[in-house]
Image (cartoon, rainbow, N blue to C red):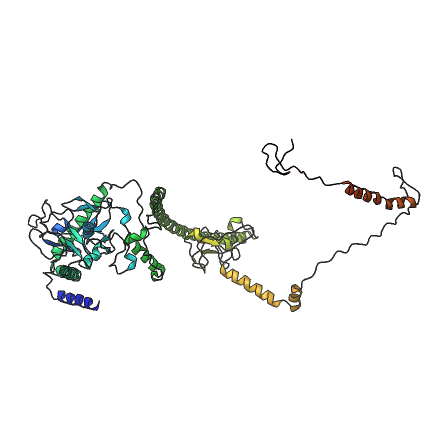
Length: 593
């Protein structure tokens, strides 16, 4: 292993000395030959390099010739950059390389689509779209990759087997490409499937060595060459590339919306969730956000499809049609709820603006009312002076009319939002908060039943999220009133004498009920020889009768003894010969005729 690592480091150091202009390696076949008939092109956005023939690039014409296309002069982008996505392959866990879109909107590596059996293309020349429905879904997660460094991704996607006879090695296509184990038949050979994959034991050593070197160089200088290329470009060229990319993305979005729906088989095709690398990454990200370490959970590498008797288990689909319909309907409802929330927010903003205008008008009216009250006061004082002057002229004291009398100042109650020290002639229409002294958000003011002041829910300490519940037998008070009432209760308890506390702690037993003793009724003396009507006369036994009763059991014993003596057992049957068969017998098998 140390020698292999040393060779890789040497190859990597050697690749770093190359000029970036010569590092044009196809990420599909790992070839570095760029000819006019099959040129290696580079994406102007992500920097990935690929042969035109390996990716199915033909420009505006049906030919893949670089001279017939405009790829050498105009910006070129891969399919993932045109759609503006960061794809994840459905057939392997690796994220590097160049991708192709499937007919169902998924993404796969170009090299995975070429080497995995069962993957088809809608257009052979353009190599798109990729179709995965012809491949058996039982292949997902069926085998474990022998080259994956992370065991959690070893059963994701589809693994292919070594093409060398009865070899039982399985691996992902991109994992085999990383090790330089993929090979392709020559163009002169007429083979239906010209793509082969071998394990480390059966692969050609020299072929594997230069492919491994090209893969390391591709990974090292793909993005570096893109950065240097961006430095060499002028701002006008960069603007032209970005404009062209936006046009491609708008065109791709329009084509996705107008694209017909892909064919889907009627029966449900169950697939384990652990066979999707993107799903595992999302679950790992969720576990990381929740603070759960995934290292403590063991990885199940057993074959989930195998059973005890060697047959494959039938897997039911995890998502039924009813659940899918419910999920889609739920999404529609969520969209409707979000639209409703946005409408309510806009209505709230409109009402708040109207409330601000009404507050301004209310303040103006209050100021105008104060001015009128001041004018009325001055006129009343002048009228009172004139009335007193008239009284002095007449020579007697005149009764002051009601209109000239000063009205009594009305102190607003605390419930109306007034303070105890101030007085006003009109009740408060808008209540003010007892903490911030503002009259905004009247619907968020709560009344304290003790101090009769209003408070905003957010101004309280701690703030409330909703209105407190009040019933007929309960009330609500602010924190200051609550603290004051609790302090008064503690002081009252401290001022109580000790005897009172001890008397409270004493538990008195219940008063027992003692019934009065009832005097027994005197028994009536019974007169001998008297009897009531209907009562039979009792016979008094004599001495002779008693002797007869004692002697009664004796005759019964004698009878029993006499019957036992008279009972005799039956005599044995002496017949031992059957009258029909003349055979011997006894009482058990012979019958008397």
